[in-house]
Length: 146
Length: 146
DNA sequence: TGGCATAGGGATAAATTTATCCCTACGTTG
DNA sequence: CAACGTAGGGATAAATTTATCCCTATGCCA
Image (cartoon, rainbow over all chains, first blue to last red; front, side):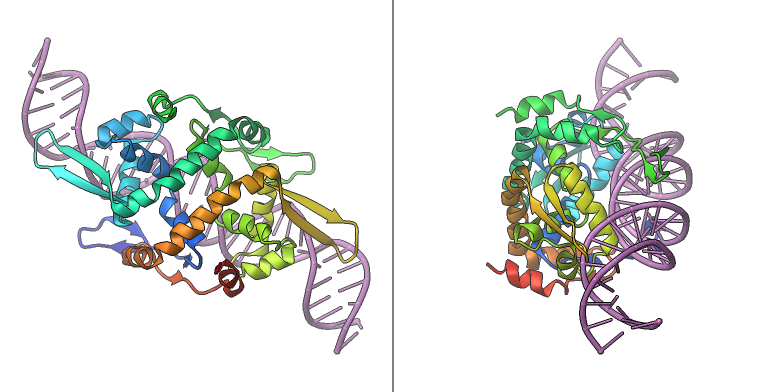
């Protein structure tokens, strides 16, 4: 069902009731988005301007990053500071609750890296997965190499 | 693009290359599915027969659970033991790597529960979320109350 | 002036994920 | 026999998420 919000932007109201019964689903809802963990991670590493983030995650379009950053903001995980300058300058930062998510993000990152060999194998075997791109984000990977 | 696998089941090959660059995305791929964390959690709690699991997660249809369990199996997180009996008996169990995911799952569960009040508020404020069902899974929540 | 950088977002298409519906099998219970 | 329990899965519809395309604005540099 379309929602018209004064100026007629297009939005969709979800039809399937959100299940929020257990902590698992709450957390999943917050991290639900292809780039959200990566965004939180980037911001936690002080990569906070949209253009910087975009260079860090070249496979994501600016559009998606904007959308998912806004959702993170709406969920209270990040704060957006707009500097009244020209050219525009924007900086994101983690909120307190956003920071509290970082141990989780780090754990995800570590688990995936620790099991990379195995996971790449089983994922590659799955016929549903056409091509796999495990190349990009050089800067990202470098910084992650703690 | 449709793939025909001998007996003509319908399958879709993904068209967008999977991004597997960092541990974050690998982990996300494994947990990608509305019920996967809950399934892993259930199995870890010794709720291992499909019918038991289904009763534990009444909001999920049997169909989805079957599908996501199969994906977890293909990814090597769970093992399926079929007892040659009638009526059929099936039991799932976590593999070693599946067990290694549990600290992550537990952390997600704890983070969500610890921030439930805040999260329910921000999520309810989002006009995109129509109805929110935070009722079900009584057994589940009871068992979670460690 | 043309091109690039900054940041943002509407409209729509495409892809992916979930939900719905319905059918197979066999044994036990009422 | 009918109804229900066990387990599974095909076909298709619906919902949701991502990708694509394109446009707005302003300043700086060559």
